[in-house]
Image 1 (cartoon, rainbow, N blue to C red):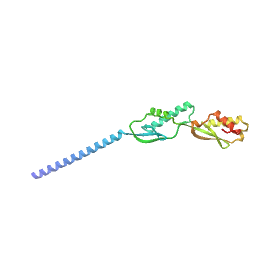
Image 2 (image 1 turned 135 degrees about the horizontal axis):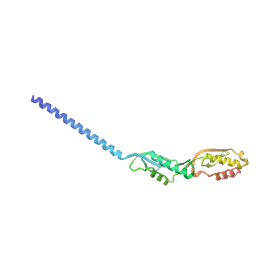
Image 3 (image 1 turned 180 degrees about the horizontal axis):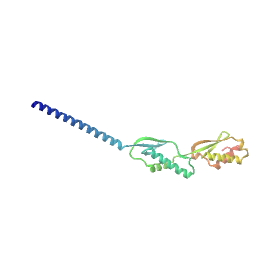
Image 4 (image 1 turned 30 degrees about the vertical axis):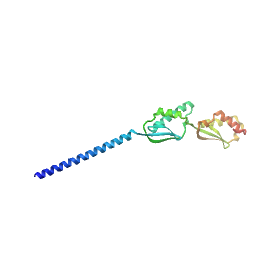
Amino acid sequence: MNEDIRLEREKRRMRRKRKKQRSTIITIMLLFILASVGVVGAQTQGYEVFYHGESLGFVQNTGVFKSAVERIEKNLAVCYNRDNIHLGDGFQLIPARVEETMDSDMCIQVLNSKGIELYVDGASIMMDGENIGTLTSMDEAQRLIKAYQDINVDSNNHNFKYVDVMVPLAETKDFSAMLAILKAHSVGITK
């Protein structure tokens, strides 16, 4: 019976040893996984903001960038007294691992400092099939054509059309300049 007890003890000792080895391996694996997650988590996921290929910085999420753009456009609407002014196109947000991100205020500062072109939802005026110029709104285009027709007797001889377009704000003309262009065009002078 002595031999049976000795064999039983040996089996128990071997089971405890295997159990201890498994526990050690599992603990090491868990520590490795936690360390890997910690390293990856230290490099947070975000977005790099590009404007026509130039990097402007990093944001934590797209909401930060959109919020900054909306605040800028809201300020532009107040400054220009128009709600149809937008920041230029050409922005790209590319997923990236980042360490330092811009908050909304910092993003606004960066966007304002880059001289990004402003666009407007305007109206292109066509007279007899020829593009005369662009105004900053459809309402302004309607007012212009009405004003022109009121002051010119031969305005019914011309075919007017206005088309909704998005153009750079710098390419638009004011009401009086467009009225002068229409008058000049109607007498055969083109500018």
